[in-house]
Image (cartoon, rainbow, N blue to C red; front, side, top):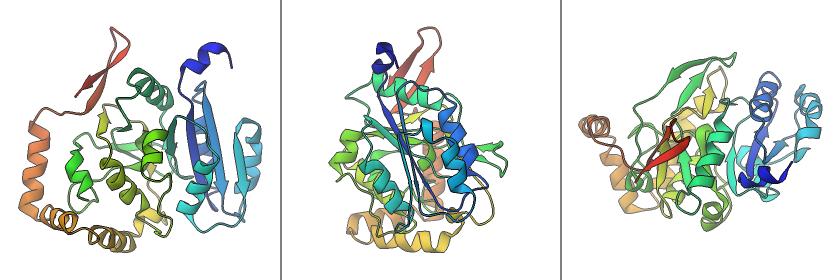
Amino acid sequence: MNNSDYDWPKISVVTPSFNQGEFIEQTICSVLEQGYPNLEYIIIDGGSTDCSVEIIKKYEHLLAYWVSEKDNGQYHAINKGFSVSTGEVMLWINSDDLLIKGSLEAIGSIFRQFRGVVKWITGVPAYADKNGNVFKIFNNFRYHRNLIRFGCYEGRAINWIMQECTAWTRDLWNSIGAKLDDNLNFAADFKLWCDFSQHAHLYWVSTVLGCNRQHAGQKTEITDQYYCEVDHIVRENAMTYLFNRFFRINIVKKLAKTYFLTTKNKKYLSYEFKSCQWRLED
């Protein structure tokens, strides 16, 4: 690493893993092959019994840290990874998902250009198939801070915030206690977004940063347990519960979707090729 590389914010990427040998090599390569100059990549494996550890060992010389040992689940593993990380910018990518080529450079340049102003970002959500091919891009997502705060982005109300294309600063992470709620099994990311929104706006980036891989047996398919945890979270605050229930009414959802599609989006980042800079709509 030369001196100019330190101009780029260090990005800490954590991958939690358990028995994902079919997919994890693609995930690892989607991070490492980007060639981001100030990357700290950490893999926390939960004691896999398939070929995952052998695959991780192939790349251990390029990792900042990795371990394979029994843990208490995905969110506990992510907390372990972030607890040993040192980057200014943070994100996690699950062991069956993918980062898009160039996404770390985009993330790094945004947080470098808007250091102290932008605290967290999310890209255009996308799905990839079992083989890693992008097959669907959702270009109609918009985000409103108060609606995040009141638990409306959980799928049944207004869309959702996809973790594999979301990144944030360590300052923001520290402001919410530097920890995911690992007592949860399915909705700790949903709770994290609600907590983040108490402290900062979410900025939407006009490009795909990461992809959620769709395949049989993935954890996100277990929707009943996820929504059980979401309902428990929103019930902890009366206002959050009321907003969440209100925006799950069909006519309200349709009106909200129309509003987001027809109004000028704020808290938005787009790239200007002439100036080679990101433009902030605030």
